Image (cartoon, rainbow, N blue to C red):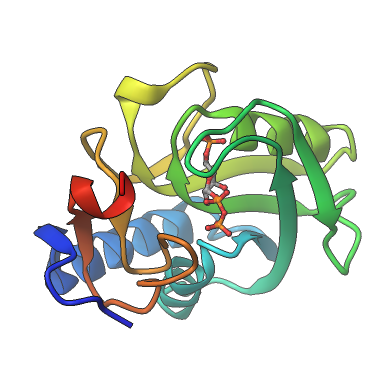
Length: 182
Ligand code: PRP
C-alpha cells in the first residue's frame, strides 16, 4: 500500500536493484561452486523479497530458512538488545550458512546473529546485506556481500517497511521526513 505523496524520491529503481541482486547471486554461485549445499538464512521480515530474488538467481544448490528477532527500543531505533524469537527449522552445524539481511543500520542485529550462528559451528558463515547505512554504524561487523551503500534516510520498499507498510514496492524509496516524524 502506498500513501500518496509519502515517497520523497526513488533511491534505487527496480532495474538497478535487479541487476545488483543478479551480480551478487553470480558472485555467490562462483564462490560456492564446489560446495554441496548452502543454507540461506533470511532475517524476517525485511529480507523476504531480497532473499527470494537472490535465491532464484543462484546456480548452486541451496536451502532456504528463516529467523525472526525482536529488538528492544523505540520504533526506528535499535537499543542494542536483540533476541531470537524464531530459530531456523534445520540445524546449521556443519553447514555452509549465509545470513541474508535487507539492511544494516547500527549493525547490532547482524553482529548478534553472526555470534549466535558461529557458536553453532557451521562449516562456514558469511553475511549478505542489500543495503548499508555506514553513517549509522555502532558495531564493526563484516559484510561479505553488499548491494548498496545508502545515506541515512528512512527507506521503504523491496521488503523494507514503515509501520509494516510499503514492503511490496518494487523500488527502494526515501520516505518523506514529515511522514515518519509526524
Ligand atoms: C531491520 C533490518 C535489520 C535491522 C537492522 O529490521 O531488517 O534486521 O533492522 O538494524 P541494526 O543494524 O540497527 O540492528 P526491523 O527491526 O526493521 O524488522 P523487519 O525486518 O521486520 O522490518
